[in-house]
Length: 205
Image (cartoon, rainbow, N blue to C red; front, side, top):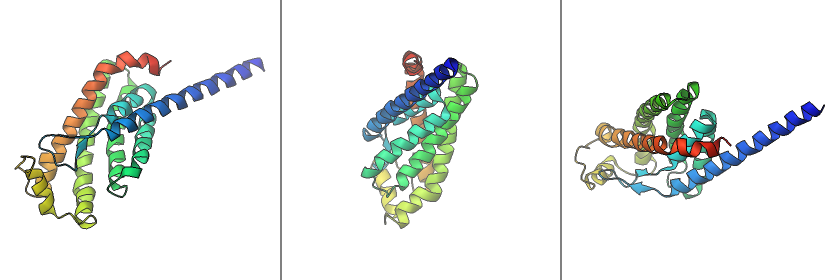
């Protein structure tokens, strides 16, 4: 009986620590999501933030499903300030989950530095492909038909940044969304590669 009680208490402590760590990481991801910035040659509606650093850290330290959960919480808490009726947050969740879920899954299979880099590189590719498809078939048509933003206006917004390679939807995906997501994946992966081993003891305590 005493042994069963100790096991129950240990399980409760583990669950409590898991909830606490997931909550702290979610709060950090939300805070970083609000600190968004524009990038050179990118239109104003396409913002970069560092929240995926925290989400990827969660996926590496606590598993891919926890990373996806943090991604979900982050986007749910961003809904009060949405400008897309939640469509942008949904796309961000799907795209972000593809990145951290893929990277986290590959890393969990063998927790080595090499495997981490393979996971992050694969996750970046998956994210870029999925983001291109979502923006081609869902997001840009949404802006055009629902938000009343003509393709010509979107193209002009890109031209104002100095990017003259965009002329239609296809070139918008090729010369804006593809480089944006490759850059995002690279920067997030680079930061996580630098900080993860330093902070992982705190996440595994």
